Length: 172
Image (cartoon, rainbow, N blue to C red; front, top):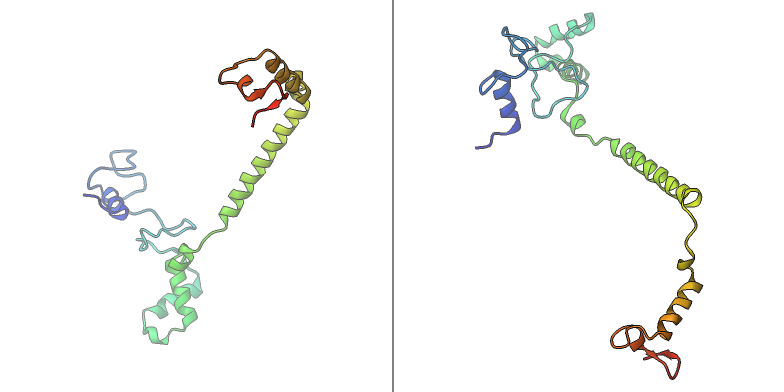
């Protein structure tokens, strides 16, 4: 039976099937079996409710807002509700699911390296490779074909079988 990724991480985090991150016999490296702190700049979609809020150190204005939160929520303005949300979480789900433009950077690097490789290959062809051998010229190939026809190479099924020796042209 396959458990979803979040369930497996919860089982492993609580030490149900095994212990992770052990550095000593006292406990885990993170300490106390808590989930990792919610301090990274990217929220985790598979674990949306952290044990600790995003902002733990509050200034005077934020503390006053937290005291006002304990009262009726109908007295809070929309901006105050958003500010309270931002104290608890770094990003909304819409911001987490927003597409990034990282693909443009990756494609830029890919095209840059393709262009650089093409320049290296061109430079090698111009300055490093020797000139083409004489046997690859059109004149040499024509002479070689004429010599093969004169020698009647492969007269049954090959080249000479397709040449008309009386008319001096290819058979149709």
